[in-house]
Length: 463
Image (tube, rainbow, N blue to C red):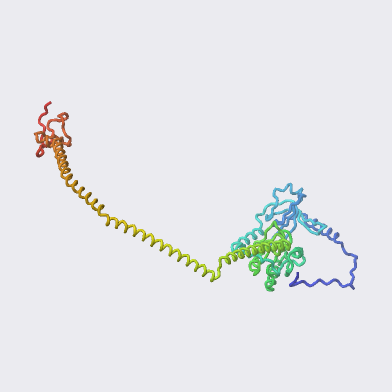
């Protein structure tokens, strides 16, 4: 593992050993903090402050700790449990509040803070509102779109890191990388990760890595901290630099509660710098087992493929014949077919010869047998005589039947009745009348006579 630093600060020279300073009249740290405490509590017994709440903590003790912000400065504040119980409004991150309290100093840490006595809402926080406006604007430009994010390289040889050279993040990254796959190179571009101008330093460190050109992936991040400490990772300048990076970038800000704009713009987000190192390089043991598993599967697949190819080769070899052997088989096949053709031809000739002989025998039999021919001639003459005798008789019988049928038909015909002077009477509907029932005087009737038809009108009806 090779670690390179592209820039560094000159060391601070120690005091000259030949000029010792007198110890009389010097205050201890505790004495100075006590004097400052008295000055604060006596000089500012009552203050009214307006600001935005950030980094709110609620420990089990019941006290509330938070930071009060404006555009340029920050102030620590505390709400004691006794005061919290009588407050009508409890603070939340992003709230803009009007706070009444007093200034106090915590001597063990030398930090002064605002002890809150009362508070009221002053509207939505300006810092949070600016953050949301910046988020919406950058999102509308597509800087947070998942489609533009690139995959991380597998097993990169050179890893770039942008973080504080003295922070815990770089030590966590190196510790994790030492436990992973060996043979990598680490390039550290140090930069401040909090405070005024930290975003510009991180952008400059990113450009240093880009100009070097060796880094295949870049980790940009820091360890945990308060929401105020992460302000540099919400900078528009840093977000645009991450998007413009020619190599994939991992955002590794060790604060899982709040998501920064850098997390959204980076190609991949890690919850901690250690997790970023784990993502960049896989662990050697599982990777080796994975490679061994793939190697074993590859060997099995190749062995199975070779077995199938060998089996197919054997089958093809069995089917493959020498051209001379193939010619011999074809010649033998031709001989067999020729023999079968000759046998079939001989059998067909024999069958035709037998049929011809049968017809020849029958023809000779009919030609030679004169008695049979005379018998057939006598039979034909007899049949002709019977036909000549039976035909006139049958004709006479048919004529007699026709005459009898004609006489019967004539006797049954209504025309014969009409010849004797009768008539058939029809009404206007064409129905035959058999009685005078239903007729009325003046009715029109039609009469069918033996010759012709007459239309008459009823003059009188007699019973």
